Length: 310
Ligand SMILES: [Zn+2]
Image (cartoon, rainbow, N blue to C red; front, side, top):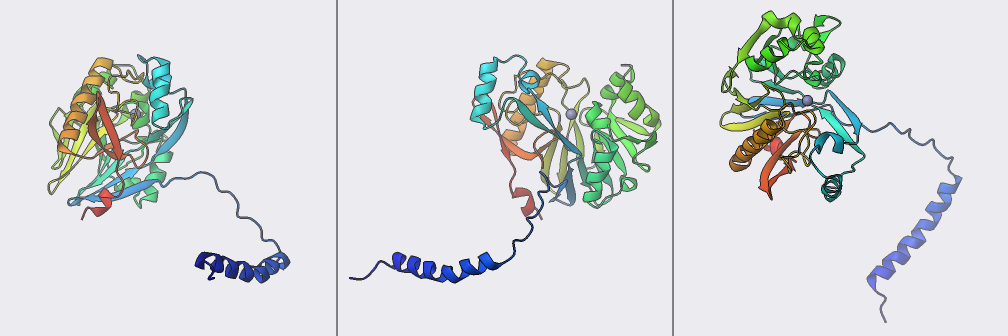
């Protein structure tokens, strides 16, 4: 009777392991490696046609009770069920703050500036860029987590940059008596130029009105050599609660009906045309796709698609 091969191999390994085990026992115990804490890369870079696009993680924080932010008009039981189905807890959520850098080959264009100059400059440094290299800063809107990196100790963080934003957005905050605007934007007013819906920062960087989150909130279409990528800024700030349920009201949206209409229009277009997008608050590296699903959309995080570009 022949023994099954597997059993024979097991017997061989068992025999071989004996001297090894006794050697281990006589070896001095080595110090364990120190735990270093949770970590995530600060930048993600890829090609888009002749452009290079880099998403930059300028900061991240944990926020409690996200249902009070993302589900204002939603029954807590429904919020809990939707979250559970998406493997998400309801007691806490992780927020990400992701400006985007576009190198057009001629200029470095930074979309939004993070919560603070420190976080912004650190993410740029990780990507090999110094603040004085930035040629253009584009502000999608003027909430504190987008204008927070504009100034460093009262001086412009991006010393050589010119600035671009939507005229409606700038007019709104200039008249609002807003501390953040007065500290971070007003001192640079004479370096600003202004855009309307459909206007271009330069060739390949086109503004798309996406109002609701703020009165003059703008998304952008980045296009080079026929490749397109949308930058939706804060049109939707969570991959499940706001993408799958565009009508769920979000505390941070100034005009909730307009914000919902913007999500439906913008994601409807991106889904139909299969265009990837970067969302400022989407989980880093903040890039994904949408398809229509049920009464909303399904977010599909990008995996390696961008690495195949060029
Ligand atoms: Zn934001």
